Length: 287
Image (cartoon, rainbow, N blue to C red; front, side, top):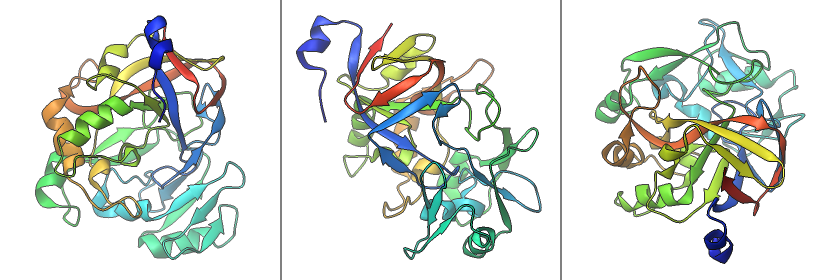
C-alpha cells in the first residue's frame, strides 16, 4: 500500500491515498474490488442497486440478522450490468436469469425475490449485536427494524448514506486489539479504503467536513459507522471472528448520530457533493 509520504507533509490537507475500491452489486452479498469507478450522488456506479426481498415479510434480506441471513455472505455478486451471482460451489447465475430466484431461495432456505426497486419505506432486520456475541449466530435473538437510506437519494439499497469509507490506520488499530493481530477490511464492507497514518478512528473527527478524492470527487462525511454483527460473520473464506466487533466496542464506542446511544463504530458514512471518477492511488484531502 502507498503512504502519504513527503507530499502529505507538504500538504496538510492530504490524509493519504485511495488504497482500495469495493462495490457490492447486491446488498449483503460479497462484492468485488475495482481499480476505478464513477461515483454519483447515489454512490458508486452499480453499488447496492439490487437486493433480495423476503417474499413473506417484504423485508430486505440483510446479514444484519445472521440467524436468518448469514448465508448471504457465501454468495458473491459482480458486475454492474448484468450482475452475476457466484454460488458457494463455484457455479454462477446471472441476475436476469429466469432461474435466479429459485436457485437463491433453495440455497438460503428462504423464499426471496431479486429486485432493483426498493419497496416504499424499505425495512430490514438488525439483530442486537451484543446478543449475537453472547448467543452465537445459530440462535434467534432480539431483532430491531430499521429503514434504509435515510441520508441517501432514493433508488438504492444502502444502509444509510451512499458511500462508506474506512482508513487503514483504523484497521490496524482494531487488528492490534484482536488475538490474530490483524483484521481484514472485507469484514467492514467499505466502498473506499483510505491508506493513512495515525492512531486510528480519525474518521470520527471528519464528520461535517469535505473529503476530496482525486481530481473530481467531493464527499461530505456525515457520521461514524455503527457496527452490527456482520463483521463477526464468516465472509466467504474468512472464518467467523467475534473480536472484529469486540475490539471496536472497547476502543471506539461513540454516538454516531444525535438521539442515538453510544455504539462501537468503525469508519464513516459520506454523501456525494460533487460526482466524479476515482482511481486507486488517488490523493485524499480534507478541505
